[in-house]
Image (cartoon, rainbow, N blue to C red; front, side, top):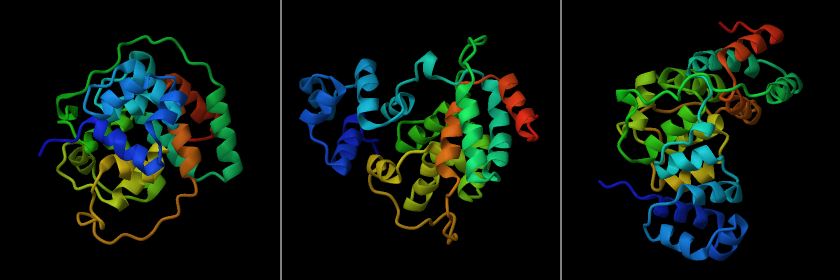
Length: 252
């Protein structure tokens, strides 16, 4: 089955948001004709994606992922080696009271971004996916410096979803069915409204056939932790280690 193009997914999101082409193009400061062309199947220009992202309230790197376009270097994670530390700091963050979690997030945001000292890590062979919304989800996680293993750990910590790294990879390769429950778990980690993800994904399963019945979870830590994960992607491995030391967390 051919995966819907970006224009189809964008149209679904606009329908979900009840957005018309005219108002969206004006808010994005883009030409209506260019937006209409994309909705009718033309490949989106990266410049248009940069304009659309803030108009939609999306992170630019994530809209690139939905479009299936490699993320620009300046929006990619700064230090690929820091990715393995993210779940460790997330484990510490979710255990904090909301006030202290907010303070941790503010501290991380205050840190300067260092200069890039190594090239952006190229996708490994197993991370090269055929077009599909599962691939877009995995690219969004990669934008947050999370590989399959890191994604599985963070999903468990933040949403209570316990799956293997192979299952995460199966989502990217289209071998694991996307359901509303599964999209809700991804939405918590990504910090994206589940309605947006569901609209972009199109028809999905009503129940989680693969994982069976799971208890409803309260994602009280979700918003702060989702923002924390995004901010950590722009920091170096040493910066994250230092954050761990200052927070009294085990980050190694």
